[in-house]
Image 1 (cartoon, rainbow, N blue to C red):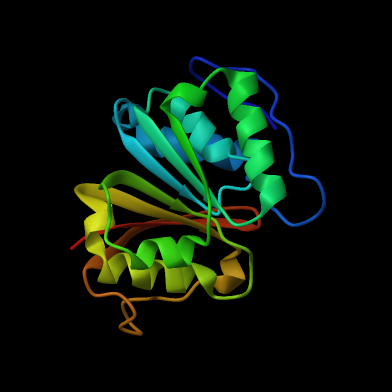
Image 2 (cartoon, rainbow, N blue to C red):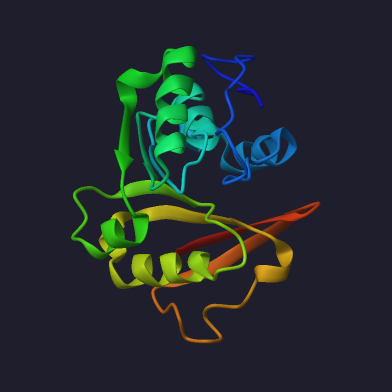
Length: 186
């Protein structure tokens, strides 16, 4: 696992010890940031269920102005701090050891242009996270995107089930056993 582009291009990142995380592949990460493109420059980015911090670190490397990392796993938090130090990108980062679902129930302290959601698989946590953001929409800037990383078997149309009303899906891309689903305000 490495940083693909930007200030920290080529830097290798450490993995979280054990089997508690499922890091994004370089191929999927590169595709994600090709879709986001130059809009990442100067953007604020929320990396939910951050694991290694790979996605948020890629955002910082490519010019995001601020990234907040949330994870509940202590080993993940330690790994994020270490990866930020290895890449020299800690200055524009905030790492929070917390349950992201509880944090998203609170009033937002800022709006993010990008909210990245890559929770543990097969527990419907991604749909619960999307519901919380939809109910507390102030977490997302008016032109912002939520991007969900799940296994294709986990996918469900959240609008059809009326789990979300303020957000709408506008794109979906599959990369092997990873599905990226993109949402924005209606």
